[in-house]
Image (cartoon, rainbow, N blue to C red; front, side, top):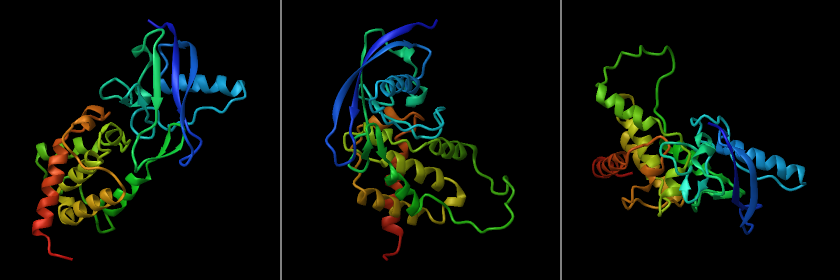
Length: 254
C-alpha cells in the first residue's frame, strides 16, 4: 500500500572534475513509496529549480534497468541496498520514514566526476574498442542454427552477455577493478565459436587497456558480484585469467 515518507538526503555536489566536492543536505518531503529512486531525485530537482538553485546532475536513460546509464552509491552500496537491482529499479518502499540517505557518485581513478553524480565511463568504451567485438564477413547473414552450440555453453555466454556496463563492479571493488566487466565481455565472446579465432588477441588487448586506463587488479573480494545488478558471476574473472595466461603462453611474440 502506498504511503508518503519524509527523508533527509545527503548528496555529493561537485561542479567539475577539477573542482572540490562536498556533501549537501536536502529535505525530501512527502515522497511516495511507489516512486523509483530517480523519480524521487526528479521531485527534489523540481523543488531546487523552483527555489532558484542548481538541480542535482545525474545520469539516466531507459529507467528500466537495461541501459547501464544510471548509477550512484546509495548508503555505501552501488545501485542501493537491493540485490540484482539498478538504481532506476530501486523503489522508495525500501526506505523508512525519517531515514537519512547518502548519495555519491562512482569512485574510481578511471571514472572522473563530470558533475555531481555524473561520471565519465568512457574508459569502458575504450576497453571495448580494443577487443570487444568479432570480425565477420559482410554479406548474407548465416542461418542461426548453422553452427551447433551446446546448450550449457550458450547459457554461460548469455549469462555473461547480460552485463550492461554500468560500472557498479568498479564502484564496489576496493581496488576499483574492472575485471568483472572485462571478464564478462571476454567470456560472452570467447565461449562461442564465432569469437574463438580472435580470443587470444582479444584478451591481451582488453587486459592491457584496462591496466593502462587506471583500473586496479582483482584480489577476490567478490564485492563486484554482490553489487552487479545483473548478478554476473566472478567465475568470469577466473575464465578471464585462464584465457589471459593461455594467450601469453601460446601466442607468438609480437
